[in-house]
Image (cartoon, rainbow, N blue to C red; front, top):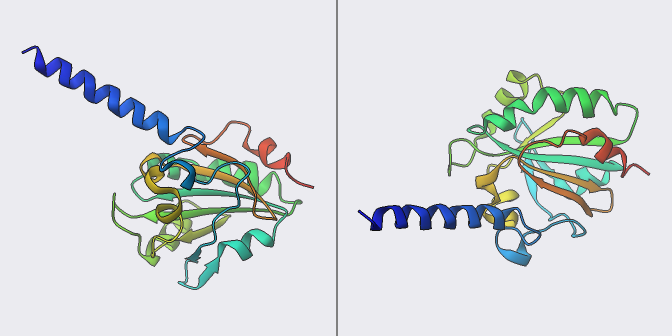
Length: 183
């Protein structure tokens, strides 16, 4: 009887430690997990028509970009759509700001199919760029276990520098955080 509570306590402590490690400066995988001040990793994903999109080129077309990673199974990722539309797309419409949501999984551990992109965009009335990572070339390759802690948000400036990396809920002051990096 005594072993079970000790085991559960140990498991709970290990789980809490693992989650904290994913949100620390080093993130999952230590130094391999890019963070603020690092260059955003080069990756090619697809648009909703299946055409390749170089994230480096897409970032370079804007003064600042907000990138969020999502998955079909992530309800918090879906709930962000109205705020992304209102606060970033509409609120910063006169700025050179890019907003993109990159879908990285269908079901947990299952890469998304291109069809998810259009269904997500249309179903959520997303007025921002929706992309899909069918080859698992973006988040899983460069950000390791962070896929388990979606949503994951980035603010990146035109030169590719990551200015903000935030795991979890969309910050309440997201528009201001993006505006702070507009030249």
